[in-house]
Length: 89
Image (cartoon, rainbow, N blue to C red; front, side, top):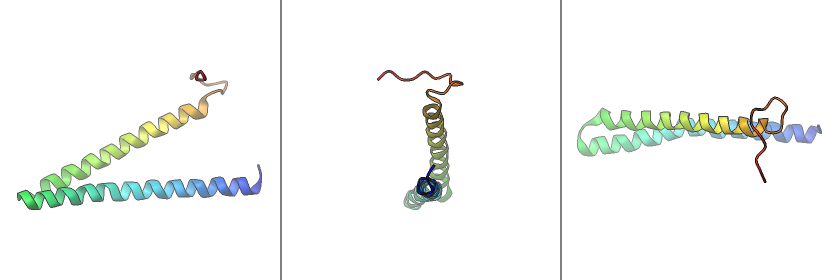
């Protein structure tokens, strides 16, 4: 493997990790802020804020799990130990 390929892959990995960290930080914050705005409008302050933030976190974890599972299936295609067969093209 060439040094430039290794650096590019490393930088791509750091970029993907930073994007995922930003997503995990900002999505619940945005959903919580929207819930807070609705709470202030309705007058039930902590209820919708908490519900929206928890739903956002659960959604992010579910999305991350299924994305990871799909990426691992794609990585195993064609390997000798793979239970997954190659897709028909």
